[in-house]
Image (cartoon, helix red, strand yellow):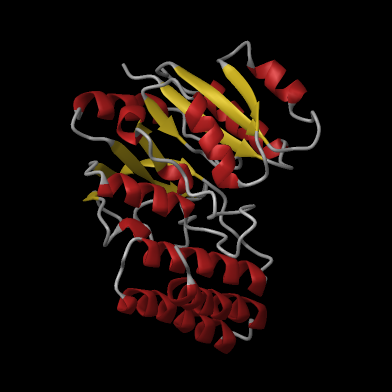
Length: 280
């Protein structure tokens, strides 16, 4: 049975990380796995927590410069498992997840990666309410509704030299504050990797409930727009995805929720800016 490397990049969160590690300790019939915690905190706040976990499963603590993509690349370089995953530090795994995923990979040797459904604990879609409801072969057309960071499990042999673009994502120091996981998977698709979306597997992640800051929306939109441009999507795609956010902006304006409306408007404009003004 395959072995997993779970790369968790974290900063500021302790209780959430403890909950994730607790969900790993509760796995039933788990395959072998290691946890690589890429710690971006300026102090040793995680040391007591990680010390407690080391008696349950292998845990390594690494350091990196600020930036989610930088941290993930540090983790990828250190991973030794057959399957690598990039769980968010505030997600949790159901008790049978790793066992079932290992069985799926073992039964499907031609599959290079799996993306799961992501919901909160009540079953509400965590990823913006857009993840597909049935299994799909992930491609350029459906990747935006079939994969988010905590849903991704990929064979390390299929990753090869592919890495996260360090100019994308939270903490990158650029205006492109998202899209790094989509870019990563699009690189894999360009290397002809087979990626399966399997919603019968679920990762739990809390839904975002604000604050709905326009700046956050702008950075997220910029990131998606840049990824669309980087991977040579046609301009109409960027305009289509921007229009979806414009519709939401109008919806929340009619609901007398101006902050949420501004968030979606900023995201729409960001998608256009990221696409039409990005330089590569």
